[in-house]
Image 1 (cartoon, rainbow, N blue to C red):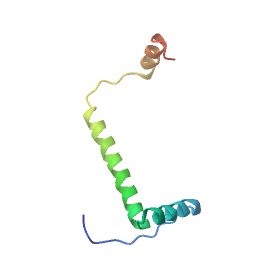
Image 2 (spheres, one colour):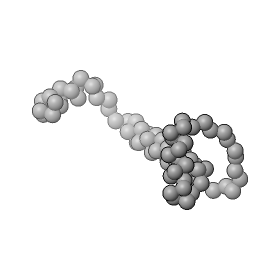
Image 3 (cartoon, one colour):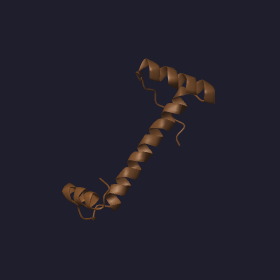
Length: 77
């Protein structure tokens, strides 16, 4: 991880900012650290989703109507 930092201005909803500030105090972590961790988490989730799409790219497509028919047939809907 780079020690270089970039500054950005972010406008928060007042309630969200208050919750973030309280979390910062309760966890003894800076607001910046909390926001950075949240963004890392979201980007990691996106990377996982993209990897899952890549893995399943060659799977056959199943029409939605067929899925509904099978759910009805099995008594799930």
